[in-house]
Length: 465
Ligand code: FAD
Ligand code: SF4
Image 1 (cartoon, rainbow, N blue to C red):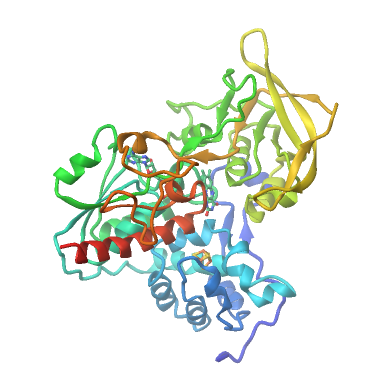
Image 2: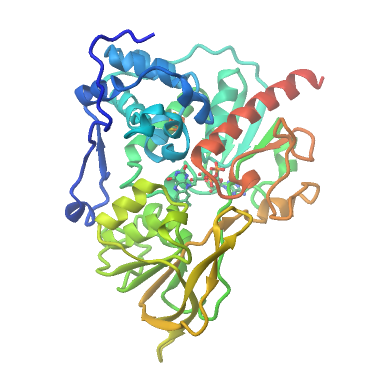
């Protein structure tokens, strides 16, 4: 049913305001400024209410209904509708890879731009932050204690869902600050900290307790938690261990993982003057990889003052796993890309610092297991490039700390935790979800698993006795 007389038939989405590239590449303020209410209504009016997009959203937001409320300028109703399915809308509206999820299924995308679902989601979330107060839910407590390990999107979502059902939920987090990769990985120019703080605060206000500085597996064991009366445990510890290429020179001065680089910047605030945990960005900065992590590291290095930042990727732009918007923004900000190039060795100067890298040219061969064409080295095409900083961003895997402290936990060959259809691990009452189960994935897939685990935990606790 199309209820609005004034339909926006444009094939292009309403343009989104952004900071100018030559200004934003020198600050950590948000790049995308989002829609105002008139722009949001105009964009919402492009929606033809087919409902197909919902199938592309892992947490199944009723997208058509929330967009309908925006058309009617009922923004409070729109955010309520989103929150029926998603507790972190300001975050997802900003960082979800919409082009391969909800927006991919929008028929408008066949002849132009899909409806900007993510931008509309962030608009209503920001509107709520500015104009209204989060309503406190009335919850009847059941006094059953559940522990969640890790405060990333999987842990926060599971905790929030269980608190709504009346459980007494405590999240244990190893860092001093909450949010997981949302805090220490994704920089503030993509996800402002006030948005992150507010959405975590909403989860805390729903009755969840978060305890920082507890490394489960070291400072507390799972047995300690069980002895303390926790009846079920959800492991949401992510996949935070960086993968290196294992080429000569990776332990030289001036070489680090993107994980370390971004954590120093985002969590330890290395961008502030006189920061206690400084960071090296001596140019040229080489970033190896083609995902969101590589884009974030390169763009952060630029903002930290590096004049010349080069992303080196072994396939072509088409195969890059990074979000299209991030690659586009990186290019606008002056990041250089060397495609079909792979590093072979990092070469040191007389003081043990990196001075250049030896690379080889690649070409694309047959598709590999991921379906992408395999990069193949071109014989005798080696060359060297000057490099003063080198950041490795080729992937992350699970940290073995938890699994070492729980030998009964069944793992896959990739060291991820195996779970059944209810997200329960091989240990009764211990559930897992997010990157620790899938390997490095996305915020919304971690949230989807957090929601599913909350249902699994609830069913298990209600039926086991
Ligand atoms: P995490 O977010 O990793 O959280 C795990 C938490 O557990 C952490 O806070 C950690 O400190 C804590 N922890 C670990 N071990 C212990 C322990 N033993 N005891 C207590 N606490 C522990 N996805 C997108 O959808 N869009 C993006 O744009 C995007 N960009 C990204 C950029 C970067 C730089 C990175 C690294 C990832 C990005 N991702 C993106 C991926 C996404 O952030 C992750 O898939 C998601 O955060 C996984 O959520 P999680 O809850 O499973 O784990
Ligand atoms: Fe799209 Fe992500 Fe929002 Fe779902 S949560 S509607 S996938 S932007």
